[in-house]
Image 1 (cartoon, rainbow, N blue to C red):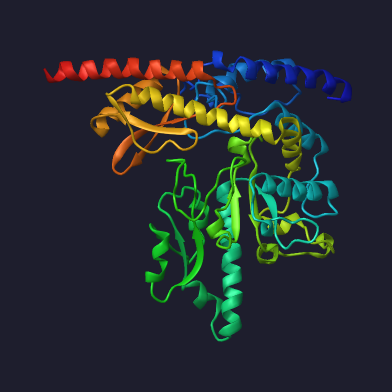
Image 2 (cartoon, helix red, strand yellow):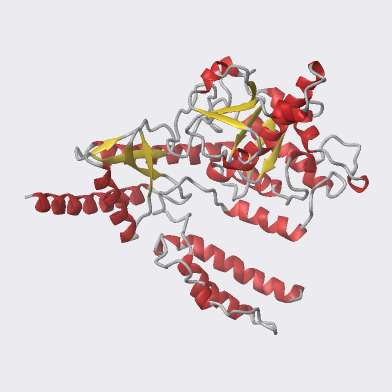
Length: 443
């Protein structure tokens, strides 16, 4: 494929993507395939000779799309929002075209510097304390990680390195192994992004009320992790963090000195396509010293060497999509997008409250409604199965205080009130059939 054909096929692909997004609600939101479906549709070996682009694009519809869960469908109410917008897609396209590997400043100066500025922009948009910003001479700063799980692991490894160094300053006879054996990390039992960090050898984790950490006699507190919005509740996990992206302050005033790092995902609610998980630290040297390797060919006299902020060496030019989105939506556009999702969540909550067969199981704070039929867990498990088997909308469950609960998350950029009304009608129709069947079986 030369540049001339690329121009032609590139325009065709843009048209295909635009059509896909514009007409996505015409597609079945959840696929009707069985595990292993795809292998039977694809040859056992790669082709020996080149194939035509037209044939590949046809196979996207024949092979790929039947197995796609359409996260950006306005009938997708599962998991959590994942951002999608045309400006972000354009930024991603440019990033792929430039194709730089931004591990150091010299490897691509614009990649390093734009990311630093974008994290300052976003930090100011959510009112992060100034200590977390890089500015021209600040000690903090931000970086884009792949996911919140990755950010958590990076923060935990940096905390471990810092703790070992500090302890050895006062206790020269303690070995690194002896110190690691006494390190303890504390977290709420609602946190869902810690799984990679749990694999760090010889670490002890305590789940539950993070305020009770002092009860662990002889332990050295290494790491304390909390989430304002958990995946199950999108609500208040611990009262240390007051996180209202774009709309409010990021860290509550009484606790502004509490956190050493802060992370959230623009790829969930800020229209920046996956992956884009933003992480800030108050003292970047605490982080970069933990990951600094610096072979000769990577050395730089500049402070911001992005390989020292992450586990991988290389990174894509991800800040381009942030730059495009922030400029083309503006802060006010992002604010209105979030407010719209919150309004739609409350619209669904009001529908639930009008039907005395159902109950709301948690406060509706952001864009998620946790609800269920009044009755047994088994009844609600069947309700969810019947809803998802119908494939008109897609939901997922959670367990709250021993109850099986259905989660209704406002996810898609294109979701409107009409989709909320359609979803509720679908839910209540299936619930009515289920309750009637249950009643007949008991009579």
